[in-house]
Image (cartoon, rainbow, N blue to C red):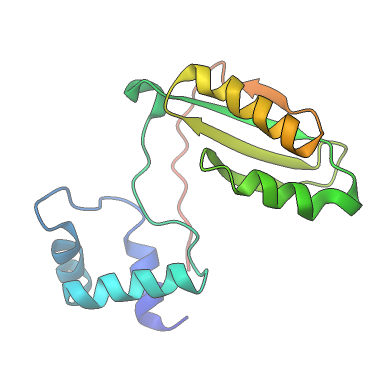
Length: 147
């Protein structure tokens, strides 16, 4: 990663402009052209420096739902199951953990009913139970990463 990409990552983790040409305005703040910023973000997504670049939505306020889910997957089957789960467009933040519940992921759906449907589809496709842990209370944690 070069200094420009580092500068982009460190400065676009909040306060992204809400205007007609947000990339042009963000690029101007960074001393770049709009095309250069877009090309650099796309390149970082392609080479997996970034896994995602976009807004965070409050799914429940838009009529959707979120939940945290966990699974107990035998080590020899972990990669197969991870690939199946990652192919669901509703799945985000799929992580490996070192305990009996060794796979954790977030489901984000357009409707609350879809949470149960996706869990059912994952269980049927993988052959393993999904432990659903819906949010009971929300806390806001401002998290930023320094590149």
